[in-house]
Length: 290
Image (cartoon, rainbow, N blue to C red):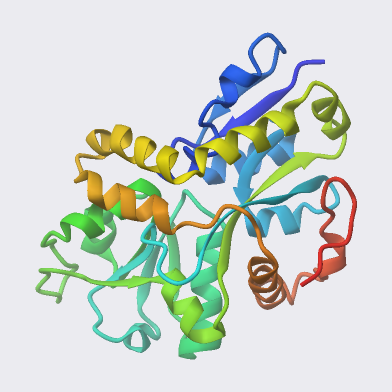
């Protein structure tokens, strides 16, 4: 049986694949790379068997996937790579205004919609577009940008052109991880490692799960995070310190506090889709207290 692991080439995923390929050498396991939204579709379609996918898509596809416990991408407060750039100095001023949504993510989009409804009490007009901040803000009052692009844009914080009637300049920046913390007092879980139910046993038997946990254990040490940041910074043309601080602040172990934040987010975002927490199954099957 051919097995495929999906990988995301963002700085925040590097600790997972620190030495994953080396550990799986000779097993016949393949790798496929893509942005989060692409891997969401690939896992649902069965073209990949395991991937770090948007947390909300793991819930939406709970009948088809199991979630690996103790693995996630989460933050307690500011995450630095899920950002709303806007011409409005108060998010509430975006009521009825146009916000461009990245086409790279599902969880971040759902988080923004939850915040608009539950925290700000506003109803913007959302439009999904290719992720390119200058183009997004040239046509819209706000733009949701994620991943390395968000980290770079926030670090440079450059002046941009606004749409008709807006002078442009330096956009305001709102970190959605921080906005969630202000609303709930809880961490936010952006991504989970999910495996297809029909191939999970096969992956476990060839050692894929063990290799992933071992690679992550090494990749999330302080020394490894600094090493990864130092190597990745030139790719983003960012100071090493920016990348080091970013990796240092991320949470990868899906603690009980993370699970509490995840449960609340899923209940708020999927309350009209019939989702209940007990539908989310962890591998191996066991109860995780929240």
